[in-house]
Image 1 (cartoon, one colour):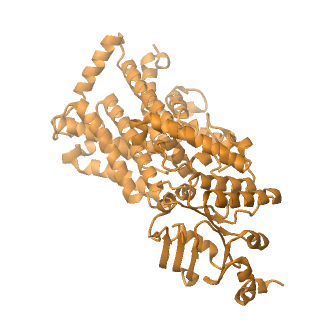
Image 2 (spheres, chains in turn red, brown):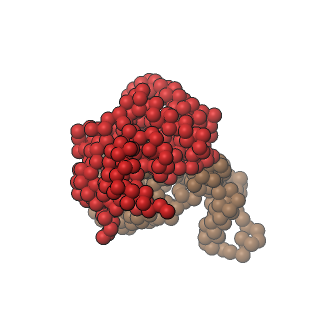
Image 3 (tube, helix red, strand yellow):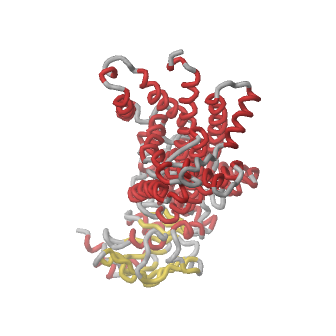
Length: 253
Length: 321
């Protein structure tokens, strides 16, 4: 298990946004986290990525408890997230957005920049090449030199996805990566995610509202309701679970 | 010769613009690139100037050793302030910095045994002693005047201040173009996004604040050398806001906009004393000193309305706030 969430709670005032949630994510899998609005998915994402402190419980990533680490340490450990509303750095170019993801860049440290400028330059060149490839992957290569603020909402989601990949993560948390992305690109994005899983062994944890897509693509599905995990398993198992039908699908007319 | 045509007068204006350029460059680095709202920048100018003067007068240190030490102390003071306050939200941070600069000024006013008190550096070695920290600098400037065949003190100073200012501008411009500068800009845009990509936001802000404070300290050194005397009231909060005006006039997020802003600011500030036509002639000279502040205020209002990116800024970057 690359990630296990153990009995995590998080309160806001008197509200238990996450109320003893536990689940595990298998290495190399595409796992989806679903649940009705207010189920606690986003809060849980924020806890796992270090942006919110858990009130209780543990988050273990690659065998190491990370629930007390700040977000940047968790990201460096290889657990990288995207945001529900894409956080494109709008006054920077699309290319610079991607280059920011470069892990262990010596050019980002003043001391190394001064001591070994050549090494920083070489790393930057490698990073540019890598960024170019990722931009082609999400079809933003034509926009590389433009300010990220000129991109549409869907394009920003793609940019953020590519930027997360730039960090060479072991596990990516994607918060509604498909929202606002046009249907053709949506299919392609899914293809890319599956490809990365199969070729690079990347693990993906996804929050997504498009249930049809979730059921079709996921290896495993975790269902949350009222801050708890009420079901988990293969898409077929989850679909057949009466608790899920009650809590979630049953709500639909 | 009338003042308006005097080379000495304009050299003096140029020296002040150069000192302001170095001071405002600190604000540009901290806010224009890293997004830090520092309203107490003048404190580091005071710390730089006082550290140098105290080390020379009280510790008998060579000015050439005291000056780099003063820059280090300014940077350390910035880092210390940052360690204590950078975790605050941007607006609270701004309030704390302005309080910090007032604390520095009040300490300088009241700790008279350390600083000479409200009478300024003249009392550094005790009342009635007429302390002087500037001998080495005067020697250096006289030597420079001799070797460059310059008659005017102010022109010699102009050369030194702008040589240093250009060097610092080039250094900041180069640093901003590196991946390090890219991280600073990312933090300005969105701290959470930067943290999510593994950047230690706090460490970068601390570096920006320390370097910005060092620049403030350097401005303080030149201020001390130029006027060969200073007192706590020279470092009132207004000076911080002059630096802010310069950065806004020139354009945010651009290194080379800082000297442009400083030049425009200096021109309005110094040039307005020659406005002896209506409506300026309705005021006496003391009143006109305040009228020029209003004039700069008007220029900034007009700029924000019609050219919010500043003189050198790029408009399309303003669209994506």
